[in-house]
Each structure stands twice: as C-alpha cells, then as structure tokens.
Image (cartoon, rainbow, N blue to C red; front, side, top):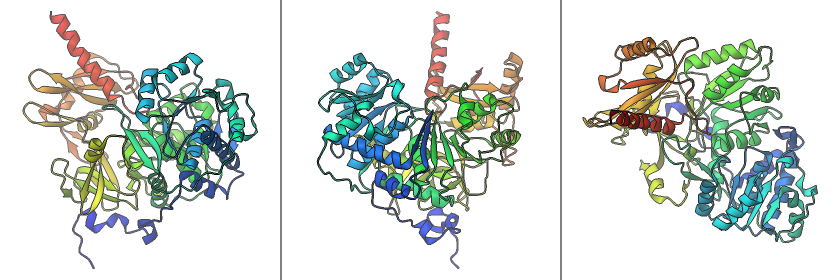
Length: 583
C-alpha cells in the first residue's frame, strides 16, 4: 500500500470514493447550444423557463434560439463577434446567449444598472457590432450609436417581456434598420436564406462574465464552451447529481456573474430542470417567487435573510429541499437558524455552502450530494486538481494546513479579455499543471472539504510590516454574542499607513449604544472560543479595530456580495471630515 505523504497533489485521498470516470470525465467537444439541444431531446415538452407569467418549454427555447441565430446572421454577426446584452434576468437574455452559441459568437451580459458611460466603455472595449437592451428610449440608443461602433440595437420593450415563439411573430422592421425590437426577430430571420456553420467545438469562446468587483473594477472573464461544460460535469459528478426532469430552480443572481448564469441557469438546463427567473427580487415580492414552488434555491446569506424576514407565517415552503449559498460564507449558526426557519414552513431543506470564482465558472467547491459540514464550503470538485499553497512562497502545503486554494481543471477560464498581464498573474505552473490562484484562504481536509478562512486579496501591511488579514478579524468579531455580522476594512493612517475599522450589524434587540460599543471593543482584546471548531481565538493587538460603527445592514453589490469598496470610501470620508473639523 502506498504511503501517504500528506500532500493533496500526490495522495489525492479526497478522490478515493469516486470512480475513474468521475476523476477523469469525458468533456464533449461541442457548443453549449448543441449540448442543451441534445440533452433536451429527452424532455423537450417540459418547462425550461418560468419568468413572471411566461412559461417556455425546452422545445420552444430551442426554436426561439434558432430563429434568433438566423436574425443575428442576417444582421451580419460573425464567428467570435461579441454581442453585448444589458437587461435583467429575462427569458430573452437566455435565447440571446443560446443563439450566439449556435453561430460561434460570444455573449457578454452587462450590468443593467450601469450608467450609459460605463455601457459605452464596455461596448468599445468589446467592439460589439450588436447591442441588446431593455426598455431604452431612442434618445438613449442614439447616444450609444454615436459613441460606439455598434451597428444595430435591439430593444426589448417593457410590454413584450412575456412574449415567446418568435418564429411566429412578424414585425414591421427590416434588417436594414438600426433600431429594432424583439417583434422584428421573426421577420428578419426569414430574410436569411443561406446555410451556416453551427458545429462549434469546446475550445470556442462562448461567454464573457465578470468578477464581483468588491475590491476593484470587475475583470472581464472569457469562458469557452469547454469551461462551461466542464464546470457542469464536475459539479454533477462530485455531488452525484441526477437529472430529475421537472424540478425547479430559483435563479436570483444577475446573469452578469457566473453564479447567476453559468452555475444556476446553464446547470439547470443540463439537468432538465425548470429555471425560475427572478429579475426584480425584493422584500416585496420574495413571497411571490416562493409561491412558484422551487425545489432548489441558488442564493446567498443575504437571500436567506430576505426569505426569513419577508415570508408570511403561514406560507408553505415544503417544495424546497436544497438551499445553496454562494457569494458570502453562510456561518454554521446562520445555517442552523435557516434550517429551523424552513422546518416551521413545512420544509426539510438542506442548506449548504458552495464557493467559486468567476475564473472557475463560479464553482470550485460544492456541498450538494455530500454530507453537510456547515463550517466548510463543501468539497473540491472531482475531476479537478486542487492544492493549498503558502501565498507568499507559492510552495504546496499539506492537508489540514492553512493557505491559498489553487485549482487546475478544464473549467478554469481562458483569459481576462485583452489583459495578458492580469491573466498571467492569475495562473502559475506547478508540477506541469497550470493552476488558478483563487485568492481564497482556507484548509483542505483529506475528504476534500474546504474550510474557508478568508481571502488573500483582503489584507494590508502596516508600516511595522505586520500583515493584517481582514477576513480573519471579521470571523473573530462575529463570535461576540451581540454581533450579527460585520465587515472590516482598511483605513488609512498617518503613522501606521493603515489601521482597520469594523462596520457591525447587531443582533435583533441589541441597541447601538456606547455601552455596547465599549463591550465589543473590550471583547476584541480577549480570547474567544469558536464553538464550531472548538478553537480558542484571540486577536493580536495590531489586529483589533481602531474603531467600530453600527449599521442596520451591510451594503451589498448587485452581485449580492458585501460592498467593500463603499465601506472603504466611508472610512476614508470619516478621516476627511475629522480633518475639516480640526481646521
């Protein structure tokens, strides 16, 4: 019997319960469109998408995508052209992507809440010949035309959200018009009479999505068909996930981010599930979406809290069997409270964490289908290679040692768009394999479970050369009995370069008084016990926050992650105010 060395790259003990075909899966050489078309032949009459009052079968989804692909060809779209889309999570956004995939074009989803200046910057970056938006005026579209290289603009009008079967719709415009609507798609498709290639392979660029941008500008992440198919196959194999036709998945995260489109939506299609799209989710309508009886919810700690606070006491949630949390870490106590909440609503839902980067199609780990360990973010995807390294020396660490997670697999992104330097920084070669530096700190155990302890990108170095990890401080402060959640950010300091400030949300019933502030600061200097791991943790003196501030809730980005940038700006503004007061 081979003696274990303790190193994941050699022992791979976390793969021992999986078959050879799980560890070395076959990735088909085809486009996402052809993969969805092939898989859906077994369930073409089933519902693929539910959006507001619109229900679309897989057969209708494929037909509409084919019609739209002909429209794109008539409009002059070529292989590798980038079609930019700015709209909420509507059905039309899905068929745009599938139509693009069919003809070898690339789709990018831009944030629908972006300013026109930001939209134009992206359109110029991608040199998009076609722009598709939602509920925009002629004045807006004229501005886009004037300041970009866009040839045509297709606008989805507000009153047309619930339309489908575009091959049957006959508009009044032609392909020679610069401004079009979705009513024109069927007519324009009929103009195109030529044959064209639809057999694009795995290496074809397919999608450009974005990093969350919580600590900087979002990066444009180029994903191939192979990246997307591999991610789905790795997840299915790791969780032993079976295709249960007719099951429903609630999709809440914007398509701009891989967790919203690649992980939630495409995975649903490849499993024959129904994607319930929630393009306008809020406290006022969360109950409406839950009445659609989802079985899976792709969410986050914030979404779980939204559900807990705004679900009527008598609403039945028995359809829900799995809540998958991504974006931010859902703590064991939040998990326990969530499970208790669902039980009160007749659901035996399992709540589990997952984790990933935009660069890994939104998935590096998954907990679905495995024993739930709430203190972890699930198991490393089988089919990939994973190692833990010292972030300073990039040397491999053993199972059980804390370092940065690095992964290698066919789901790792191709590149950052037109940014070779950043692409090179994100990857490195180890033992002949190319690995992605995830920037995620944690511990990998022999069963493949990953305990997330922070992100290496969120730290600062003081003038005395002490390195301070902000996620670690957040974790410790969150152990204090009056604290619900917190975020710690770096704050500029004249002498030390940086100190840190903690923004804290108190538990219900705890008032934000000076006494509570003093109590928390005092606790920061004392050892605290983590009841989950049994460890005793104490902040070092230089890790203790310089100050704290109470907030009713932590601000979040559109990607449903904590808005670190906004909090950093708030901390900087506080310094400016104090300086003005001293003058």
